[in-house]
Length: 213
Image 1 (cartoon, helix red, strand yellow):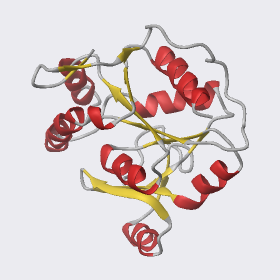
Image 2 (image 1 turned 135 degrees about the vertical axis):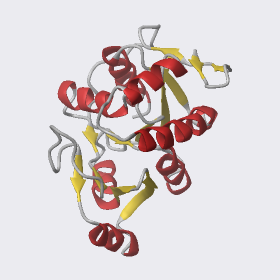
Image 3 (image 1 turned 90 degrees about the vertical axis):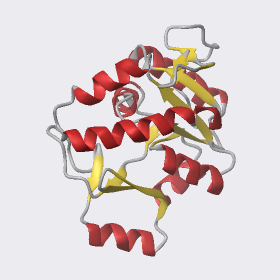
Image 4 (image 1 turned 30 degrees about the horizontal axis):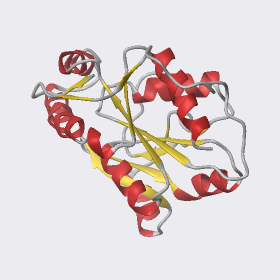
């Protein structure tokens, strides 16, 4: 069960629970549906995406554009494409982004053309984005499959956010405020997975991607 800050629970699939068969690596199809992975900041979306990239290179994972400064260990073009405000605004104005949002003082967006091209080629395609972006994708691509990644508990999410050590107290508090709102939006998604194990979440993600190809 995914537990919200208010103590309410929503039905979810906990990592390690039963999953349908077909969890092997997905093969390219003539037609592919976009899968979107979202959830609150600190829940582990980037970690899951990185593990999927490592274990299943046949799943194409979009690289977002951001005005945020790189964190230690991040590589331009791998975790994100890092750009300045002027370049980001140009991408927005020219319609080159499938979705974009501003969060904690930085802008994030998904380049449209690479996603369109991979789906057209029938490749399993995944976006790892925030709630605002997921809602935009839902409006523009109604057949996209939206997956919400939930923390085991609110306390665990707070621990993960405060334990990063890379952001100020002000930024962390803003992230927590947004996280409360994001957890309440889990019902808007097609599937909810509880991140108790990155390995099991990856297995379930592959199963879902396979089932919609």
